[in-house]
Image (cartoon, rainbow, N blue to C red):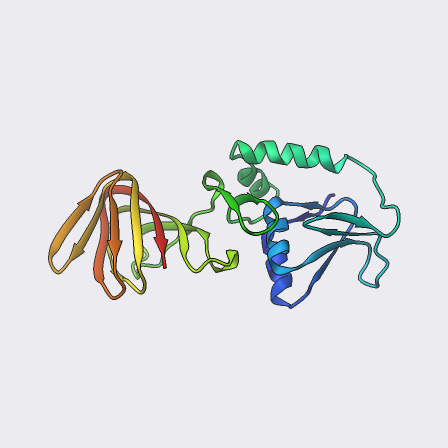
Length: 219
């Protein structure tokens, strides 16, 4: 069975202050894993940890020390197949079906200066509002792991209200549905296409009478 390397594997290695990940010729590396490795300065090497590597792979390409094994399906064919799934927004569900827990599918230019996230592949996480019955979910697509000073993603709220203390500057853009925001007894209603801005320190109540999906950016 081929081994699949995703961004979380690279991030776990980076937390251990490791700069080399050893792989074999049949290992598949997702585009987001390559981006994470490039940002963390981690190299992929084929071989074993004792130094008997046959190739080193960086964001600039693969540098061979000796001929590498090339059995099974051609890696370029596999990459192109995964790329087509990713372009169609289907890679996230495929990876989940084989037991790979990925927050979303993304690709970049290899330098860390550009990141494209396929939001249709993003995994939704429950937001702790203090009430287990609340149906509030989010997925964060951009954050500190990208070297960004801001965070961005999506949030959904379904038929509930909850307190929200603003700890930074926040912007919300309503994608679909209805968002209500209460401040000092006054209720503001935002509809698709509307944008809201909150200053640090604001004490609000978020909610929706039915359902809402918003894009947010915080700094």
